[in-house]
Image (tube, rainbow over all chains, first blue to last red; front, side, top):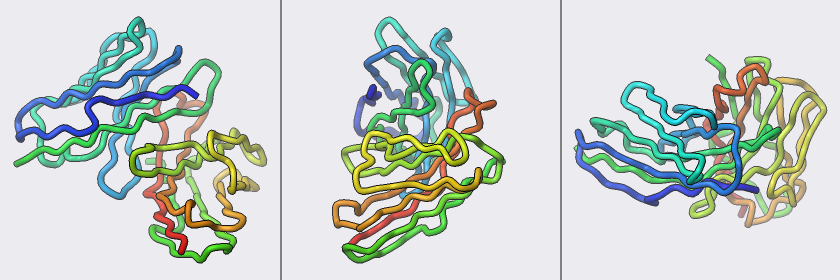
Length: 111
Length: 114
């Protein structure tokens, strides 16, 4: 099954800085989603970008998608300590009900 | 808001026991999923269900089975628990009318098999 791969595996930044995480995948997709997971908890859906979209914004989040490179990036602007979490990208292919998740980027925002 | 509830946050079971992990959602979603999450391996799909009484194998179904007798409930069954099934188990659901809104996850069940 296809799988997204996040990069970097871990990221540590100061509060107020921007955080950028990248995701690469292997095959054609319908859409790509980003999720957040606080330590020991379930995942929370952040944003979805469709395969025919190139950029999407939601609050302090900006997602880009480059289907020619099979890659996406998640930018969190003006980070806060509360943004400390693991972030996962997930993809689904044509006709598929299921999402395939990457291994995640662990973000630490230092106050 | 959609709520997905997993019956236990933490569970300790003995090797060889039959284990039931329960998941209930309250928004009439058709699709439900069971994942396990392990350090360094990310989330891996065990089983999923398109609708009531339907089930499909995911990427790692061995040692597991599922039951979906009612639309709101999706149960994961470990027929004979083994130590390599120690993991975090995550249930998720999604409505077919909401294909562009992502999954809603439960809080997870951390299972330890001793």
